[in-house]
Image (cartoon, rainbow, N blue to C red; front, side, top):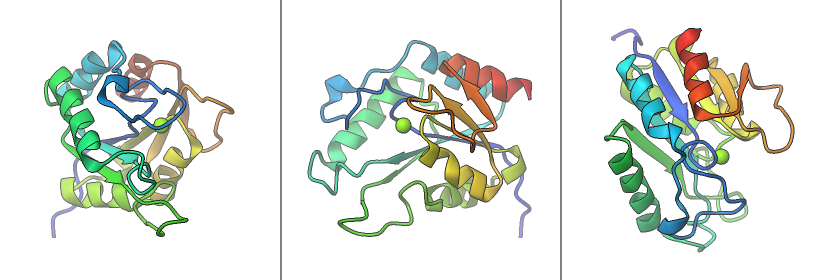
Amino acid sequence: MTLPMNKCIFLDRDGVLNKEIGRHIMKIEEFEIPEDVPSGLARLKDNGFKLIVVTNQSGIARGYYDEKLVDDCHDLLQQQCNNAIDHFYYAPLVDHISRSLMRKPDSLMLEKGLAKFNGAVQKCWMVGDKERDLAPGKKLGIKTVQLKALVDRSKLADYHATTFSEVVDIILNS
Ligand SMILES: [Mg+2]
């Protein structure tokens, strides 16, 4: 067995890599990437991090949009960010339709990423805007950064940031 060695950053999507619009992204035109995201992802990648998106997309189970839209958004992100993302996980289900261990605050998406990329939890980070993004990181012993808390600052956040560039500074300086 190989010991976990790699450093990974788990990234929530909506509100982190694309602008939060206050509801589900239902068409590609609504998927807007902040200016500092491509350069921020490049800095993280240059520093040897594996970049893994972990996003709840219950709009699929709710019938608001389909997998193709999710894939199209992820293709657009890769085009604009020089293919910086190493892997995308998304959780299409929601409790009232079907329980899912993938859906945050559960941790299966992060555990899959740790296994796939041989990630060492003490070298990994979880970045999200909501408390439910930070919970799976805390559960696994991964450091957490909360970006742009919409309501309250979460106690589950080890760090707070207001922009994606600031998130990158925090990670690279610690
Ligand atoms: Mg979010």
